[in-house]
Length: 213
Ligand code: HCB
Image 1 (cartoon, protein in one colour):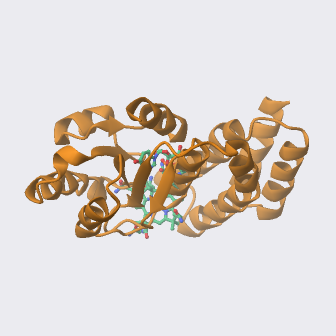
Image 2 (cartoon, helix red, strand yellow; image 1 turned 120 degrees about the horizontal axis):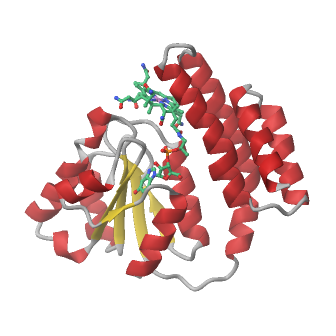
C-alpha cells in the first residue's frame, strides 16, 4: 500500500541506503502508487528526520550527505515517471527558479522544478548559489510569469528580500510574480518582504502557480 511503501522509503533514506531506496522506488512504479506522495511523505519525511537528528547532534554532516544522496537516487528513479505523467500539456508559461546566493541546498528546488514542469510550465533552472543579479537578469531575459527562489538557511533566506529590492531598482518588479520557499521560509516572511507567493512544498507551488497562470 501507499503508506507501507512511503514508510519503507522513509526508513531507507534514514538508513542511507541508496540501493534500497532505488529498489523501493522501482517497486512503487510497478505497483502504480502515487509517486508524488512517495516523494513528499516517504523520501522527504526521511530526509527531514535526518535533518532533525543533525540539529539535535545525534547525527553528523556525513550522515546528512549520505541521506541526501539516497534521496536523490530515489528522485532520479521517479523523475521519468513524473515527467511521463505530465504528458503533452500545453505550456502555461515560464517559471524561473534557483537556490539563492550562498546556499547550495538543491534537493527541494529540484523537486519543485520537476513538479512545475510536469504541471505544464516551462521551467528555467538557474541552479544553486545563484547571485541576486542573476535572478534579475533572468527576469529580463526570459520574462517569466514567476521567479522562484529557494533558501534553506536562516542566513541565506534574508537575501530573498534583495530579489524584491533589485527587481524594483531595475523597474521590473511589476512584470513578474515572486515566489519564495525553503524550510525556514514562511508565509509571514513572504508577507514581510513583499513576495507574491509562498509555497510550503512542491504541490503547493504547483497549486499557486496554476492559480496565477
Ligand atoms: Co544542510 N542544513 N547544510 N545540507 N541540510 C539544513 C538546511 C539545516 C536546517 C540543518 C540543521 O542545522 N538543522 C541547516 C541550516 C541552519 C540554518 O538555518 N542556518 C543546514 C546547514 C547548516 C548546512 C551547512 C552549512 C552544513 C555545514 O557545512 N556545516 C551546509 C550548507 C553549505 C551552503 O549551503 N553554503 C549544508 C550542506 C548540506 C548537504 C550538502 C549535506 C545537503 C544538501 C544536498 C543538496 O541539496 N544537494 C544538506 C541537507 C540535505 C540538509 C537537510 C537535512 C535537508 C534539506 C532537504 O533537502 N530537505 C536540512 C534540514 C532541514 O531542512 N530541516 C539541512 C528535503 C527537501 C525536499 O525539502 O524544504 O528543501 P526542502 O524543499 C521543499 C519545500 O521547502 C519547498 O518545496 C520543496 C519540496 O516539497 N521549496 C520551495 C523549496 N524551495 C522552494 C522554492 C520555491 O520557490 C518554492 C517552494
